[in-house]
Image (cartoon, rainbow, N blue to C red; front, side):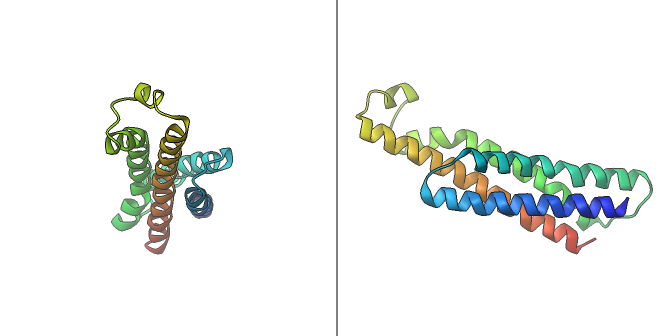
Length: 146
């Protein structure tokens, strides 16, 4: 059972590493393709696996350090916070430019509309790539405290 916990933890670190690095590249290019979002969602789902497996290990009587538990559960929280920030990205961009709503963006020139859309995409990708990299650090730290 311990080998399974290690395997799912390594998988979660690997997928989130790729998602974070690919996301950093996408952020740099101000472009988010489908592959980034697929990797990111896989990475987010993968943080649940070691947490669930760790809960099973604890239920079966294995002793895990408090730090290991903390570092193993924090990635779920980071993922939720990242999603919350991603959802508010568009409104933050609009507020920074003094635009009242998405409907008002439609009244702008096409070039300005494009700039706003690119800024929103870049903000969303940046937030989520950073969240994935923070998750990697937390999971690596969890592995170090095992």
